[in-house]
Amino acid sequence: MIKNVAIFASGEGSNAQNIIDYFKASKNIQIALVVSNKSTANVLNRAKNSNIPTLILERHSFFESNEVIEQLNNAKIDLIVLAGFLWLVPKNLIKAFPNKIVNIHPALLPKFGGKGMFGMNVHNAVIEAKEKESGISIHFVNEEYDKGKIISQHKCIVSENDSAEDVAKKIHLLEHEFFPKVIEGLLS
Ligand code: GRF
Image: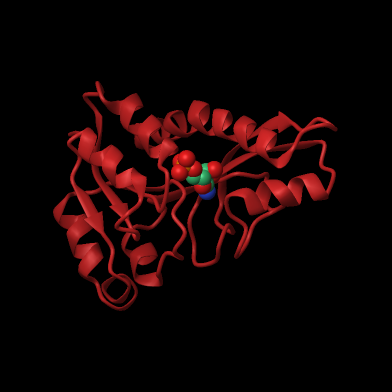
């Protein structure tokens, strides 16, 4: 049976696009739903361009009801992929999808994780700390930001002259290379 993936994203969605493209021709895995908390997020345009159904989250129903769980069950979702999703995943959703929610974090956790550590904040912190390397962490999601079990990590070098923007570019390359493969591995 084909496995259904829901991608949750809040912004640009370059990872979402990359995952959509990677599985476009797959007979075993399909991106069945793209979910966003932000009605203006570019990721929703990307989903529409690929004819993938979208769902816009409403704060109250997401945090205080089981509506979203029901919608995910109706879509027969097997795996939830967070790709730049900025809301904390509520307990009821984690319980309904045990070890079936994965996140990508743009640093080598446990370093540079936690609340407020997203986007350029992460890369700026890496530069300020004069790190010699950074990378990505793909991990299961539990009830705390960036604390779930790590599935895999991939590293890149941070050179002395790198700006935070340079690091961001390196990280995106790693994300695009490895995230779809890890998703594929989890579902096969
Ligand atoms: C990525 O760096 C990812 O690690 C994260 O947010 C960023 C999303 O980028 N947590 P994009 O929207 O996929 O381009």
